[in-house]
Length: 105
Image (cartoon, rainbow, N blue to C red):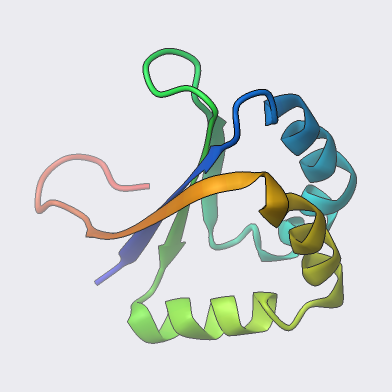
């Protein structure tokens, strides 16, 4: 059964523009190598502001753990993370399983 991971980063007020620049120059070049697991990235627009949200899809928990272990050893990702992490006020991760009805990405 597929496992989804929803990651929400709440950034310090006023840091979205800087975060977008870091993602464009360092983040996406590092992360796109793993986009087969990535459902999408989203920016909050109304409601909770200063949020960057991304959703990942894995075969199971072991696949999730292996993927993140690989990402966290990637030199390009580590360069990006070093620039991006100081912008994060709070991080929340949720593991989700698909409902038995409806479409599933």
